[in-house]
Amino acid sequence: MSSDVMIEASALTKRYGSLRALDKVSFEVHRGEVVGFLGPNGAGKSTTMRILTCFISASAGTAKVHGFDVFDDPLEVRKRIGYLPQRAPLYQDMSVWEYLQFVADMRGLDESTFKKRMKGIVDVCGLAQVLGKNIGALSHGYRQRVGLGQALVHNPPILILDEPTADLDPNEKAEVIKYIKEIGKERTVLLSTHNLSEVETACARAIIVSKGRVVADGPLDDIRAKSDKVRYVVMVHEQKAFEAGRKAPTAQEVQEALGKLPGVGNVTETPTDDNAHRFQFMGPSGSDIRPELFGLIVQKGWLLLEMRRDSQTLEDVFKVLTKGDERKDRGRKYEPDEDDDDDDDASAALGSAGAAGAAAADDDDDDDDEEGDDADDEEEDGDDEGDEEDADDEAKDEPKKKG
Ligand code: ADP
Image (cartoon, rainbow, N blue to C red):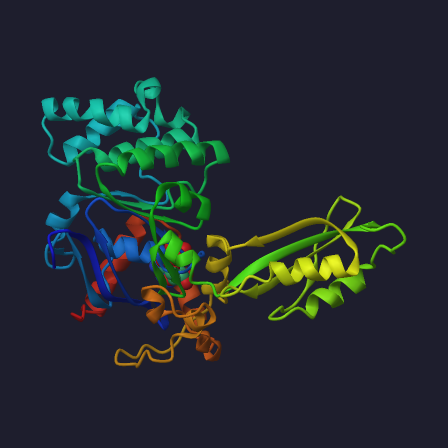
């Protein structure tokens, strides 16, 4: 592993009973990167992060942090990682200063190092106004900023942040993301979220997981470009034609004519407040049909109000890649040697571009049985203590298989 690789997950698999929460997840994060770890609820983001931070053990595969194996060298790993779980572990009746001092004590920092470090933390997390306040009296946004501070106390080169903005209002989210961006200038950050705009604000690269598998990994532009479709939006006046003496079209006429253009699929009407017919449809990304579209409108004499050709947004691509992940139940028998060759339906749907599309989610999961119910029964709330116990139990039952 090159010294530049700060996080390396290799074929990480985690099973809960018959549910495979992670299925051979592999990725690398390099020094200085701020990587968005994206996926719908239940995709496996927290599970991955808990393995990387040594809270639970993997059922198979390996993970290294700054060259140290999370299983063999958990203490070395913990020294190098600052972790903010979904709910920051805060003591409500301590002041912010007392709490951060307590964390520093736990981390073995002496008083003068703590004070020096606090200068930077207070600045980068925007805590100056609340240092003397009790944590219980703070807003959610401030509490998350204290959580960020706690993750930075021992000055780790790597930060793992698990949906740090999940419970925040839009203003608080923006604030916390601003601080994460600032922190990311000097550190390697893995930031899990299902909020795509946060990733677009803070990260240059994203890893998308779905149903426990990596379905895309690369720069955001490359991920956006994975779609082989672009969207067109056309709006024509519903009461006036362009030329005097010609009739304005009906919605049906417009829809039928658009549907006959080359490569155009399903043409759907979209609502508008204007006196207009507004339609959208998907066209092939390899060609631009705006000239044909314009020709059609001129020939018909319609009054054109809007014509747009949009590349797919990250959100569009995300929806395609994670299709079917809304099903929580994806339990199936665990077969360590199972061949993965059938796993590229989603990447096929998006064309061949992109790095990790190779490990794409498979809609073959449709043949999953209902065994996931067991796993749902086992499911716990995000209580870290509980998870640790859970992990310990599992560590006994499921000795880790090295990948
Ligand atoms: P995400 O963070 O992407 O929302 P998680 O990693 O929390 O997803 O969960 C992945 C899957 O593993 C989900 O189906 C979840 O129900 C299941 N899971 C997570 N933790 C446990 C647990 N302790 N026991 C049983 N199932 C779990």
